[in-house]
Image 1 (tube, helix red, strand yellow):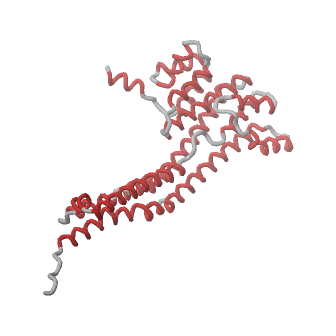
Image 2 (image 1 turned 120 degrees about the vertical axis):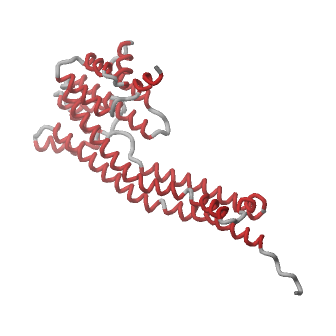
Image 3 (image 1 turned 180 degrees about the vertical axis):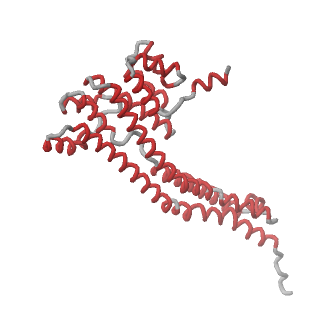
Length: 314
């Protein structure tokens, strides 16, 4: 029973897959409430929670936004990204309903944006995995040196804890290891892709304008949606181009959103490339000196202690 309950609580797929399945159900003629119920009955854990909130009287858009708060965990990048994705879905739902845009088409566009953003983020995280893994492996180098010294027959452990100079080496080595761990962690976190879907402001504006409302009305709705307010001024050049060329802004906005996602992928790969060289700083400043303190110095002290001093006057 416990195993079955655990499996039911696990999500069946990423947010993009859930949103795409929802769009297909809506296009097939299901109402929003019925579509969510079908997803819930199929074993989608997130849909189950959203349906439960909706059954308790919470509007659907608020139930979707509440899912973001339910899955978000501080200091957990994956949970933060998941929460941001649900807020984007709630924002798209809010704007689409408010302007009367076709909800199924809006959700299809949202699913494509989320899937593209997920692939972009995955590419960046794969690129970051090698330098981050190398940094974690190198962090064990000082302790490995200590074990090698003991395996070679040097009494390194007693030197570290039973000698004044050894205690200084032990304290210095551990402090350097801690500093290297903190420094490396900050560099890796700074290189991670930010939470949220790149180009989401343009996507939401495209949904709003697809419903036939004015730019000012769409701007207010985007600012009021979940995760807002947003920097709508960043897409002003796209809107200005639409007005001057006399063409609909919807496709221009979606093209701008796709460009933002491509740019985010490029910038993420560049951050990953820079991370490899930046990780050399904690390696050279902290990890290697810690190796000298915990691995090399105890062996030298052990040799000195084991070497008899020559007799004076002999």
